[in-house]
Amino acid sequence: MACYALTGGATGIGAAIKQRLRGEGNQVIVVDIKDADIVADLSSKDGRMAAIAALRDTAAAGLDGLITCAGLGSNVSNHKLITQVNYFGSVELIEGLKDLLAAKRGSIVMISSNSAPMNNTPEFVDLLLSGEEEKATEFSATIAAQEVYSGTKKAVAQWMRSNVVDYAAAGVRMNAIAPGYTQTPMTEQVENDPTYGPAIKEFMGSIPVGFPGKPEDQAAATSFLLGPEARFICGSVLFVDGGHDAMFRPSQV
Image 1: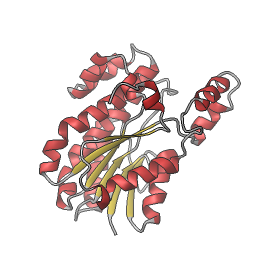
Image 2: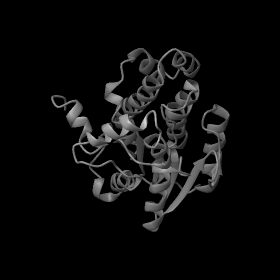
Image 3: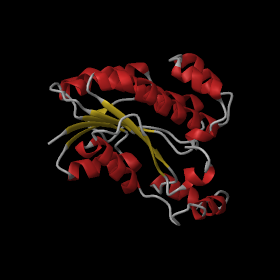
């Protein structure tokens, strides 16, 4: 039985990952703002430190894996909150738990997005990667919500790839998944919205495989990347989006 830590496991993709990993016989320690084994607010540094301390107490022998799934979408009006949770709430937990992961030669799966390559605010991404949380959150208030969301997800993928060598040297593999349109209770509300619903349904209809993703699709990809069959996969971003990224960026590999 492996021991995994999972942020954002209360709903949506995170809940599906939790169910998948527990169904495979693993221990999954969920960190979330509610309905979790460890209740913590990852939007604040104090909350992140509290989560790290609690995980150290709960998994003192080490972690076989960490999945940083806690995140907020572009539907959230508080741009600073998206920035704090999506990027800093992921990176700081990984940094704070590196030794626990190294103790069991564990694996990390971060959650990016297929919208990350389409981000048009490199200055925002640079602020995130520099670790300047206050400046990054202030800047986020000046740009569109989708640019905040895609920027945090691009920074997550870039941080992962920039740190792969160091973590691999410690015995820790890092990868990311980049979900495309995935039906969750939150997205279904938008699909049924009289204003936004028609556009969303048209977007869903453009997915090359012909159907939207389910949280279980993201959970399956995550389980694979965590497991021994992916032992030689390190530093990859796996697009789990029904072909949308290839359709949007056919000449880029």
